[in-house]
Length: 205
Image: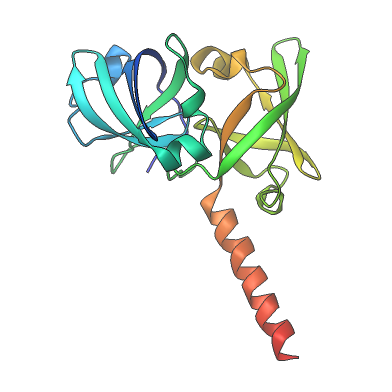
């Protein structure tokens, strides 16, 4: 489990390509290295990946075909930065919201609005995910736990404070960029359950 509180931005320092498979190597922030072991889970732009090798601060992760298909990690290049967070431990503060590290789809940045000390970013969701998005609900954007500011059909926005812009890679996002989305799992469970119950009642009438 993750909390959506990004612990740093890791630079991609090398990429090894194979058929339908990729290993990328990132330089993790020093504060994230103590106790890091093979098999540990680290979220990259909100996607849960497993540590396969540790060489000092250079840490290796494997990405299989499905990960490359449904996330933006396959588009990374050497020199890019990814939001990283180690898995939460029992007793840790949950400063954001509970996240699984399972990306549900890619949203597209459609507008960035600047104002003094604030930034508002609008996204467009892939069809089918809009039913899980509500004003003031939670959403995971490239691994960042954020509150939804407004919803308009398949579009929604978030409001970003300077701290978020400083600690994550979202400051560099521009219209046309594709970002990883994780819907709040509690919201998804409620919506899916209500839909199933209503469908069963409708079928019984």
